[in-house]
Image (cartoon, rainbow, N blue to C red; front, side):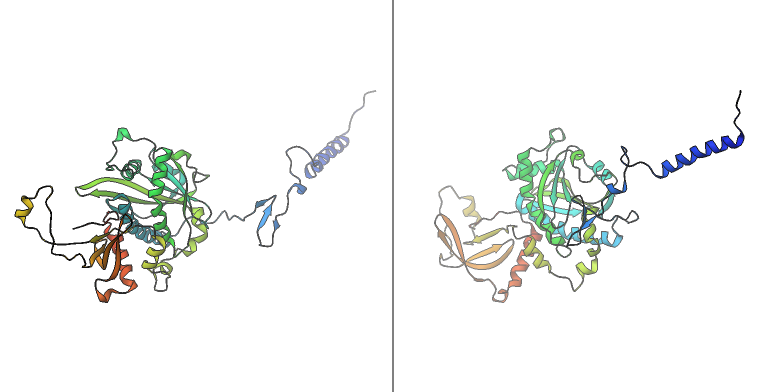
Amino acid sequence: MEEKVSTEELDALFGDEESEEGQAAADPEPGEEGELTADDVAEPAVDDAGVASTNGRIVKSHDWGEKRRLSNDQIRTLNDMHDQFAKSYGPALGIALKREVMMTMEGEPKQISYGEYIGTLPNPTSLTRFVLPPLEGTAVLHLDLKLALAIVERVLGGRGDPVDDEDVRPATAIEEKVVQRVMGDLLQALRAAWIRVVDFDPTFTTSESIPYYLQLSQMADDIVIAVDFKVVVSDEFGVLLEGDLSICYPYILLQPIAASLKASQLFGSSSGASLSDEIRNGLEKVKAPIRCNLVRDKLRLQDLLEMEIGDVLTFRTNLEQAAEVVIGKTSVFWGRPGTLGRRYTVRVESFISPDDQSPSTLEDVAENVLQEGTGKSNTMEEE
């Protein structure tokens, strides 16, 4: 006998299936692959210092609406700091290269994405990472490769002439070490420029010649602050070569101290160290050119034209007379020349001017040395 299912029975049958599926969706069976249960989510543990961590990893809150850029006022402060840095480091580099060096900023610091910054760098080039503890993270120093190779040649005894385009090549590991050693004063000058905000201890770490391998940031759209400089090296005949130099700070590196980048704090009357203190603290390793003028006299042009090898020059200066000690271009001391072993020596007797016997006089001399950038090595000359 044929059986028929009524409409009420069909509704009851489908209604039970839908309720079972809904219950299963609401209460999924735990332990299935790819699913996360409440037991799998561990609560962050907070230690005595108030630092939260989960499974050994530090947990930090993140505000997706946070503005991850510096303000215009903070950028102006960075501009003033790095302008001071350029003025102090240019002469210091000139002393190391025994050349006249002028270093100037190229516009204000720029806030761009990490991808944009990498796109502006030539390939190959000279890139050196450096850390700034206690700040967490890494910054990078970019140096024009032509300028870097010329610096290496100059330090190793050459003229330091500019390299032709066809001769540009990545620096070797030894050349990178030479550049880092010459640029050691750069880190100290940078520290002096930042000291009113944070006293970090900068140190070079590794070098790269290909920008793609730099990996300064994990994301191409992360914000970095790039500060560009122009370096001009001259000799007695004029400009020898020009090159670019830039420093790149990831925003995340400066974020903890961003609130301290205030012009009133850095350049106000209540600021901390003076310029002299910064020179002393940040540029202690810079060598000031010094010479001792043993004798000084005049020579007739006729005697000069008749001079031959083996002639003896006589001077009216007494050997017991004090010699003039010149630092940079400033005559500072009277000294007594002598010898110590195989080396010439000068014992400082007094200031040339009795009114100059104060520590501030030596601070002024130090500042003048940085501004002059005479590029002379430490020698003792006879005139």
